[in-house]
Image 1 (cartoon, helix red, strand yellow):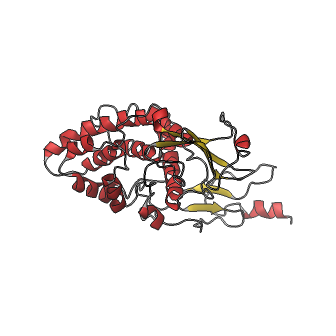
Image 2 (spheres, rainbow, N blue to C red; image 1 turned 30 degrees about the horizontal axis):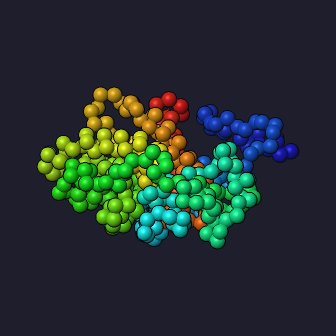
Image 3 (cartoon, rainbow, N blue to C red; image 1 turned 120 degrees about the vertical axis):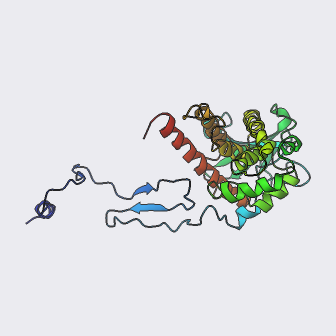
Length: 334
């Protein structure tokens, strides 16, 4: 008896008839190696890749990366070290700088990557001058990575992006308690920031924009059980994040993405409409900013700090999940 007959005979149920999945009947070759991504929930802090092959149908945890995101590795704990002495052409290798903006140069941009590769770069992979600098993050024939860097003063930037006094005054003197609440309750579900100690140090050095600090405080207030007077500042904090991130779209950075991601997780201040009006356009803005700073590109071999390399991966997958969730929720696309 041939193999096809054996398959038909063995697949016939002997007991009561049961409903089963329709067998694969295409005459084409059956695809193999189909990857399934486990559905992520707010409690999920471990990314597990499930691989299904034709020989084995049981899920198998991939060995590439099984480190829980709520327990970042050392690079993420240390955070990104901003350049000392202000931004300059010597500031690489990090794109997170107070006074400069790094925009990713894609294959279809006005500055073609296959032309940029012929520029005479120096030993730091930089070319240009203070007002326009090209940074070669990865020299490759197949997947090159280039950034164009500009001082923020040429991009209609705000002068008060890093002015934190107004945000602090809204919650003073409870800043430390709110940071504790954020890292205790919010951060484990969305671990997109560095450790609490590192973040506190960056805030003290004014390397964190006001939009991100306001988003952290607003998220922490959802868990506040102290005096009610502090809760009156919730509306001001939310407005600060919303207005600041809109203006920061002209000078986007990883910090802008972090602020928007946190803001988009907040529950409506006044629950009148379950669909949370305005969050779908904000998600579109988030995706656009993420692509403009190159989060969609694989930074594995880029000449950046290890902490930034890891943060870019975490932020891109967070943006991806936010976008897909909004598509399913707002557009009813399964």
